[in-house]
Image (cartoon, rainbow, N blue to C red; front, top):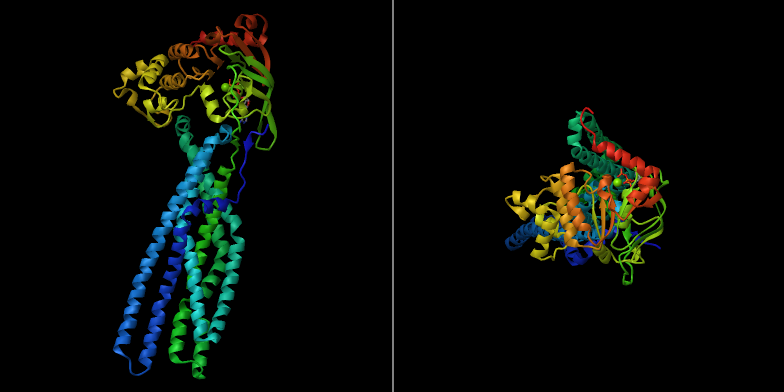
Length: 589
Ligand SMILES: Nc1ncnc2c1ncn2[C@@H]1O[C@H](COP(=O)(O)OP(=O)(O)OP(=O)(O)O)[C@@H](O)[C@H]1O
Ligand SMILES: [Mg+2]
């Protein structure tokens, strides 16, 4: 059954689609950019008219005043048009960014959770930094490129109108310049993509370094790890200088040919003048226009690096859009009871070399509705993976998992979320108050329901010690609270959600025996009447389970009650003996 879908699109296309609702603003910005370009040459035309007027021998005061006023108005209007371009471009840009970011975040709601694990740095970079380039592309790069091209074309038209021979002479420089620019363009995409990738690696290295700082400090290894960050930063510097070196020669030729078409216009113009085929005012005008004719093209060339970087970044944004998502099943079939069945389930992960590594193989078992089943097995035997498949953090590679006889892949996401709760060993708390963190499970819950969850989870004791109680802010990931306190908040969430199926994965693993005992009591209350799959290293906590599953090497080796297994399962006996040993372990003993 296909459960994951992918979206394949041209990376740049998604940006233009995000900008489309503001196409009117963008079209107006481009029109204004062209108008600003026209207004940039207008003073030259007016000054040329002034020169013609002066050359006529009897200049009229009214005409001179009109022409001079025209120059002033053109300059002021040009600044206004340019301002309009920037304002409209930024407005469209910010709105497009906002649309694209919310689209990406909305997609993340449906992605297969396993596909984004460990990628928070890359994801935030794509959603914030790469998307963030779009605003400047719309407000500056695109209008600059269009107005630059337009201005050059207008100047070329004017020069052609003044004198076709001078136009052809100047065109020689353009051919030379465009040839040089072509070399830069052809050489550029690959280094730019490498540069963006190196930038991404440096960001990840830095995030990694900051996250591990406490551990590195404990082992006095900050300096070693800092090397990795430094190396990645130097790698960016090296790529940037490689790009600069590769482009420097064609770039100099391009700049020269763009800034000095006068090298052709002036000698040719003077020659035509001496042969009396060109008027002096036309020579002056052609010189002025020729001087600025190709200059705007350098503005266009300056846009290329920004476009290249944007293009390379767009591929990262596309990668976020291409993350596999759970396909929403078309029809909602009513689920039966809350019996969970694993039918011949296998699961493998893809290694970095592209090989499939089996983690679980041919697992079959049933969790009868309202029963408590525990999972035991050595570290790495696949216990957490089993829990993750039931919580649908990823889909099985083979076989199926059913709830009430219905394949969990055919249960709509929202309905599935209501059915299953999971408490992990390290509770994840969001930046916000304790109240907000608990209400996450059911935002519409009444104050009574919230207080019941607080009492039942054992949070009440802890809240009494906090002056702000439920309104105490907790930092990212619950910074400022102890492991036991965070775990109680996670249990309060599960109480509030009150889903019929509960998964516990080493919910007390990180706690000291005293805290673990308290949390275990709360969990005991939480389990009442639910279909439970519990993983615990503390075997005494699961002595009362209805059934225990024994996993080893990704296979289901045995199942039975605590007494059964203790009597006949060698693996269980070994685990039990180890557990007994660790409970009497003491310093020096
Ligand atoms: N995404 C993954 N990529 C690579 N290996 C994985 C992945 N997920 C699980 N594994 C591997 O599958 C095996 C089972 O992992 P799992 O976390 O399910 O074990 P566990 O029984 O819960 O172990 P523990 O008792 O230590 O928590 C391990 O060898 C683990 O490294
Ligand atoms: Mg585990």
